[in-house]
Length: 113
Image (cartoon, rainbow, N blue to C red):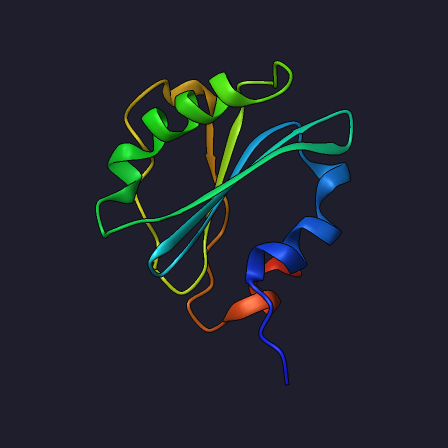
């Protein structure tokens, strides 16, 4: 038996659909993907607490500085197993909160994207 992080499964299925930043939040962990032209160009992850959504704009700004190329500023936020979250207040025009289904867990939560 092996354990695969949810982010490793997601990265295989989503690159063609996003241009910008995709934040995947799981309990205790946040993964940030940066995409342009259908390719993931940046990946970052870190442990987070319950207040991660307040820190998200700063986290994305920090990751954008270390990215190898300039990426679109659009941000999609998806939570899995954490419940719905409010949209960050910063730069409201670039944020999109992806649907949250409380009955879906793990990789199945990514199937509808």
